[in-house]
Length: 158
Image 1 (cartoon, rainbow, N blue to C red):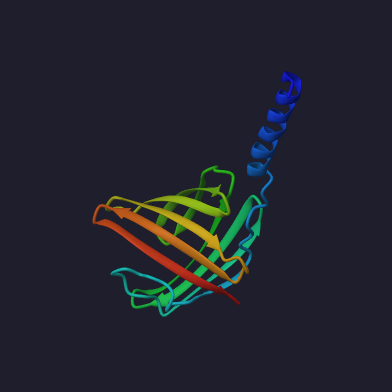
Image 2: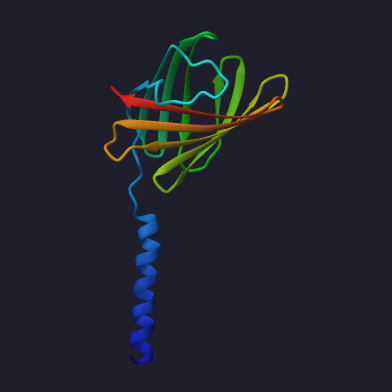
């Protein structure tokens, strides 16, 4: 193979490799989701009796409405994210949450920091969607002044 043909081949291969990473279609989390408590893992925390999540995802904007009830009471909140890594500010109860969301392959990683009044709570959540689009998994790692905790919510599409 002559030098020109070799260079053209290398450019074509490089274009395929680079293009395959950027041409991938983003996962869409739109839907109404209900907690599957049996498949979820709450660590030492009590499981909510009911948890629903409604997602309206129009890339790069994602609106999430969550409501839950359980031993710790009832809570509902709406948050907005953009999946381009820009910081978004939301109010969750009495707390202000600053979050960034960005793609890691087909998964969406959301990093959130909350000032709880007694220290900072950081939450790194990885959202993944099953191949059939019927199961949303939210795996979260929480870090607070009291320690670290891992929680996994498994939600079924309604």
